[in-house]
Length: 360
Image 1 (tube, rainbow, N blue to C red):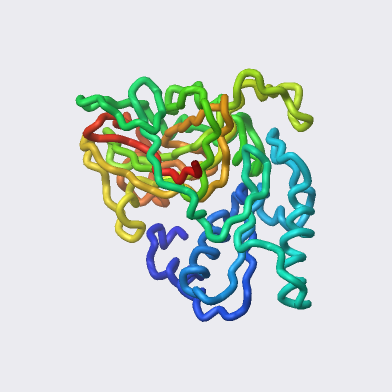
Image 2: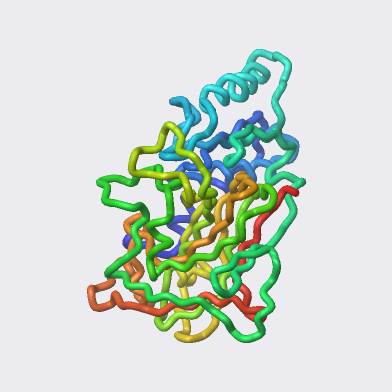
């Protein structure tokens, strides 16, 4: 890894997706929405199989699980978040068993091509394809004063929010100290991060109807920095109403009232914003687009909840620190690590937004 920081032939030789063609056998691709190790793998294996093998039966199942959670355990909660029942046994008995019974024993097939668990409302949903055709593209715009809206910004001047990012004092990925990567971080409460001056926050008003996001999310940021490199972390969060009552999984030190549940998150090393093969520096002070994909979700933000987005530039130690200087990070010295001021623009001319797929 030290010798191959960019996406070169070393990494291309290890990419399985180009080889998923001429598959004749029926396939069931299963993954977990909270698979911290390989969420990308299940989602993109399914999409690639469907694209490269149009006549092959390909099935897709995603549940609210960590890595391998579909094969073991009840899958009834993750951290403080309750999933309404044992999702693991349901998958194994109703989906996996039905698939193998049909293709190995010849029994009637009684499952749809896509069987995905919808978080937020804790229901299994079926579709013919993924992402579902019912989902249409919309944009969630970052507006001045921390507002998030499906309505485009009207401000003519170059409005922006800014923060100082210091790699010597990074934003932690969990609220506390742990000796391991707690998988619960993928649904964890983000209130601790929202209180920090190096984390920007936008949120909608209280929703007057359910909003269901189904499919991938694209972050489209317009940014500027005082240095020559920066990381950009985007988190999509479900903010619970103040009236939310605790469930049986919550400890005495946690309150679900106002809980900020992370739904999906992703980071982009800024030098790779245009190409993972050919990194390039930022020009200090220049407004620059940074666009990247967050992995798919199927989540309903219920009436009375809020949709929140947080943006930050450190996420330690989940991702390594960026010195914020255009250097080979693997060989960076202490003097390379420096503070930087980052701006995220929210104007009509330079809008920042998330492109999402919404089921009306």
